[in-house]
Image (cartoon, rainbow, N blue to C red; front, side, top):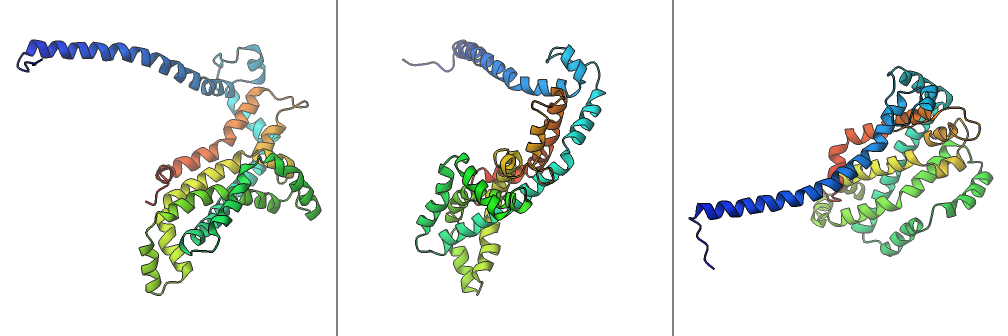
Length: 295
């Protein structure tokens, strides 16, 4: 059937029909989107209205009611900071996260370089051996790890927690960097070796600069995991001097806690600030690293 494109009335009717069909279908799509958006934003609304309530006001009002004023927020911050000793706990978690994530990514990068650029014998076997540790639940490691730490005197020590985090955080970066380094052209390091560069020089000056995105993305992911860890820190480092920020938050709740949810939620909000700041500061590199490429 031939269509007369010069007939403006016919073309206009087709455009109107398409507009109505699209508009009708868009309404049905918009409704579930709005419902999901409200469901997603409700916890954030609860957080905002809770941190500005006193304990008495929180008990007297509904949990989603607006606060009377913004003044109780300062008192909630002071209580959360002093009672849970968030200053020491945040410092511990910050050092665990920064040092542990950096060492884990560095060791993983060195291992990935050896497996992909040095043609080591049995490199696939070594990779499977290292990565196999992530196939089992972490709870399986707690009992033997605790007994071993007790014999070595590493329970409630900074170096003991750092060793756990570094060991646990190596396999996943190794998986990513192994694939990332494999995609880098071998002509780069071969040309560097012809010029007399050592393997260390090739690794530091040629390979790592071509994988900045994945390296920073992996560092952020591992830092976030270490910062949010409660399983290992609550068992191996629950002393006040070495406990993490998550263990400190846990101390605000329980049978003997007299604090209201307003203080606990405020402490949770404070504890989330470092990870948010780090992600915002390095967001450009993180988004590039999500592609797991070599740019």
